[in-house]
Length: 513
Image (cartoon, rainbow, N blue to C red; front, side, top):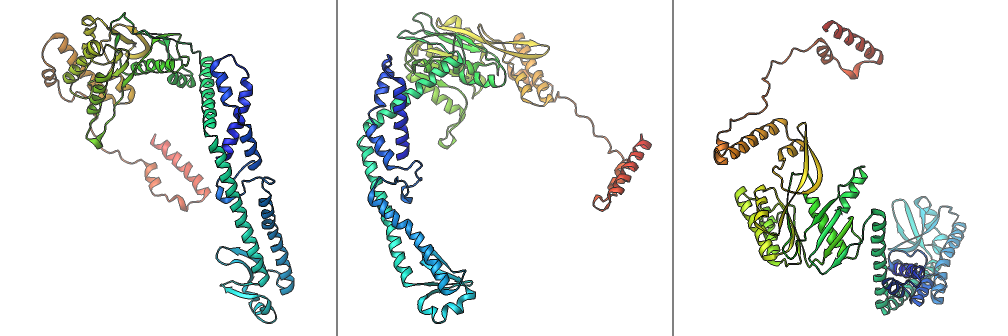
């Protein structure tokens, strides 16, 4: 953490020097917030090594030369290792045991260890007067000496003392940083401001974004708007994003677009891209569009997707209704609302009734700007009844039985959702798709001819008009090749026998053909 603050303040000073005396007020203040930390940077530079360890308790983070007492203690600690090595050499010569070693663990401290083959020699006079026996294990025997015990005390005290000094220095550096918490916080905010500004600038220049016009009106005009995330994803696949316009401005009346069109045509993308553009514009960023003019959006409400909250006893439809209720109870006349498929979680007539009433409430009571996507094509008649509602649709083309999504949003209403075609694209079995086509055709024909209610039409549908399943046939008699292979054990034949078998099987195929 100390090193990170040192690096951050150092880099901040370098960035401030790059900004210089910029005429832009925001950047000028940012540059000032990044300066004035030289004393703290110098202290951290002198106190810390270049790459400190992760944990302070391990020590080793204070640079040599920063504290004289620490340097002296470290010399004693580090030279103790050399003394141990020299002492081990002396003991090897004295005992005549080349494999003798001085080791350390947390239980015994420092000890002398030899293999058990030298036990008799080490425990016999005169060595047993010099080497004091401490422990015997299966393969080793361990000793100590008076000199080794005294040296251990000095070395251990030096290690603990060095760690204690480093902890004191750590506390001192921490206090120095906390004393400047305010200016350091300002520097962090300044770096964040530069990071955000540079990111926005990079997007604006690299992605062809434009500067939006933002005012206090109720305008919402987007020309050539794009979804920044979807556009980049398509670009990676070598595909182009289809830009679309959006205008929710109709004088002082509410401006609501009722968006219809096929599944997979891009309705949800259109809703979300306009919400994102409004957020970016009010955040001070350029926006992914050819032109953008909008009045300030006081609130942004989104009801899209499907989710449940079963732990609280809320079904998918209940969650949808709770979120819709929050929108209708809170949205004011400067809000922007995007709604995707309100009422689809219940029966057709229930859902249509709810969606219809929600649209009327948004228009008459909330009086907000809104994009309302739906598959209830019956709702398109609202544009003739409500002054502030306009129909829009996502265009498609049909070509030789295939549906081509153009992803273009146009004025007007859709009369079909092409759900069966989307089901086919998703991989539903052909028999299911064909059966769905039959049912849809019957329902649509009956509705156009006024021949009855949907339930009556369904009751008249012939059952099981699916692709016929071939009748089971008798299992064919095994061929000579199959019978020959069943008698074969691959693990017992040689390479030569395998080659002969290939010629034999080939001959059988010729005779069968």
